[in-house]
Image (cartoon, rainbow, N blue to C red):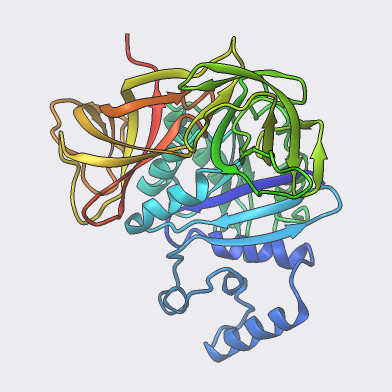
Length: 418
């Protein structure tokens, strides 16, 4: 069954957790004891309705504050598709958690409160969705029941968002008017909005086309682990384990190993389900080669005539995530890229991006918590990478503060500006 990984983002109290709860409830994807539990909690809190947001706001601190703090993952399926949901926090303090939740998503749902329209967090999250290269975006104008299901409200918010989004790199944007609390246009069509002729949210999630989202041309296989099990039936077994980051690997393919540049041929592909004839993007497999090469963790297996870029001088968009310390120019950080760990420093901040108007502020010397900017980096050893918009796996990295061990920033590698 095909799987869709999607994230819900938006400002605080826009109804993300309620929407997820409604999807789970109306698609009959929750157990009876779960429903009894949230009914009891809702009654104990004095609510005159079943608070479906309790299905995802699992932390005690979240329930006490009525907001989402951590990324909550939920799973459900319909006859057409299975789903992984990442319910991301909306508060600006937890933007880094939102980046984590949306970084691997195939689709993002941005909720907008029909009463307030597009706010700063809407713009911030939409910008991050664009930077993270999420292929599909759904703008859910929520709480339509609180504005009398007025089509003019929906159209005004749509025009406001389109004006802002015209400056973003968004490929596929869909607008839906919904009420997560009442269930309008979530799983079932709403009788309260006959003026809307589009699909329900669940119908869109079931049918959105994702087959062309993966890079199946540029073969990339970062080696995570070298397997030498010393098997009695095959004492010379040597396999290279990892996850396919791009392209399709097939038995019989000629491949090259970087950085050595040595070549060989794939003789086998092992998986937890047995031997395969080919491996596709996202699959975790073990590659067997015809030749006994010196390969280690962090090496990259690719096609001889289709290699990733290699450089120690890099440009990237950087989302600063460390609330304890700002970016320091020329400070040494650990850099984690695919399965490779290197050291590097930011040598220059080219500009900082103003979230509200997308203005590029130059002359900046650092980046503070939640700020986003374009930077140049220098690493101690070459990285084998692609432009982030070409491959989200080989084009991304994180910086780690060596003193604290905290993740300092998430970065997206880009082609140098001309």
